[in-house]
Image (tube, rainbow, N blue to C red; front, side):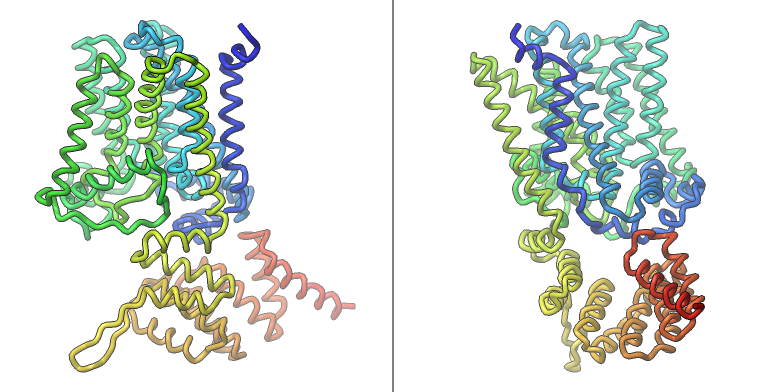
Amino acid sequence: MTLLQRVASSVYAQLALIICALIAVYGHTLDVPFYLDDFSSIKENPVIFNWQGQLIELWRFSAARIIGYFSFALNFQIHQFEFAGYHIVNITIHLLTSLAVFAFIRSLLTTPALKAHPQQPYLLLTLPLFAALVFALHPLHVQAVTYIVQRLASLAALFYIVALWTYINARLAAPRSKQQIIWAGFCLLATLAAFFTKQNTFTLPIAFLLLDSIFFPYNKKRLIIIAFTVIAGLFITWLLLALMLGKNPLSLHAMQALTRETQAIGRDQYLATQMHVLWTYIRLFFIPTGLHIDYTYSLSTGFTQLTTLFATLLHLGVIGTALYFIRRLPLLTFGILFYYIAHGVESSVIPIRDVIFEHRTYLPDVGLIIATTSSLLIIATRIVQQKIAILTICLTLLIGLSIVTWQRNQLWRDPIQLWQDNVEKAPNKERAWVILGKHLIQANRLDEGIAALEKTIVSIKHENGQIEKRFSVETLLNMIVALKRAQRYDEALEWVALGLQQNLPPFDKAKLLTNQSNIFYALRRYQEAENGYRQALVLYPQSFIARANLASILAATGRLQEAEKMYLILLQIDPNNQVVQSNLQQIRDYLAQQAS
């Protein structure tokens, strides 16, 4: 055996290759800023930045996702709002999940269904590495890794795959042996961790049944036990979820409330729409072009719609094909069925406001990867005899994925470019235009920012000739900021007046009052500005901006000691805030000068 062959067959060398490849495509993402739900879940979430180390606080905020939010709280304790720390954790989770995929597939290849396969030694050497690299480098997974809050998706997938891996090892161990008990214990822990990270993992008991049915000898008694365990597991999962959220688990009303995120979409309509969404996900897996954060997606009218019926029949055809090859190509069958099972929560009858998001494919893609990579390697060995040719095919594929992923991550580093790309691909998506406008305003490209926001305003002409403008709260707030920065104060205050006429929730009204006070502050109407900041803090006491600006008002009106105390409180939340540090230092320098 040559040195190259020894290295290639070394598990440690393969793991090192996965690590190096992943770092190469994600290593430049440490400065990617917060996006979308990063603000509500982390930056503007008092449960995170005011966390006192009590798990009960996180439990009350989101019991069903407590492990994920616990990781955000720990991140804040160490890194505050510095992006790099959050990204290092996200990349590490993605790396561990890729390694878990590697270990899981190696274990699959030692099950009774595959151990006697004529190509098993070849697959054991190549498939785990190839599949893990495809998973680690696929551009469709960028959103689950580089979008900070989607750590929930990647962390849940990590626990899910570890649970499957430990389940196989428990099944392969001698019955009732110490080794089997240890593996079963780890499987239980991983399952519970998955359940308390994200709700899409509730399909895990069904995945256990799928594993046992395909890769282990048929045993009617065992399958009945497993099926009963699956049903019991799902019932216990439902019971825990309902109790965690303070609902009666036996109430039909609670079942309705806990199995939908929005009332705006019916269950049948959502399921029908998902028949199209799943094909979009599959297309993006095989042809990863047109990736973007915020999709515009039309809702299906139902299964009577011809295109929806056709899409559904195609899914059934794929599932039927997978079942047909269950004995000859068990990896293909498992991969396809796992793909649909793993989508079972987010692409079924549980309506979610946003019908499509790329991070939702992170876990299901493990199934597609197993199905496609195993089929590719098996077919390649039959068609192409030279191993170097097979290696060239795999390397070409991996290099192509790496380039697209690196470029996608590069785009995420620049919010303006990222959202400009998004509005080009989804020109009718209001939220994308609002966020693009926000980032253009932050970059002081005010005219462009205002133009972007104006695309989200709908003008309605009434019968009396009056024109009514309709806009979102986000458009309102960003328009006020833009006009204030452009020193168009009268126009900005007109927008404030429009906002005050609306019945806004406390959080949004606090933001509106803060923006109004910022205008008063610029106009040196300090008392009105102070009153507005104090009203905002009554509505939302955790507002960092309102408190920081109030401290500036106190300093500007000579109440330096009060301002100093307030700045110190702010630095407990965000110790790296340079503006607060600078303002505090100026006050201290002035007080020291006065004392001398």
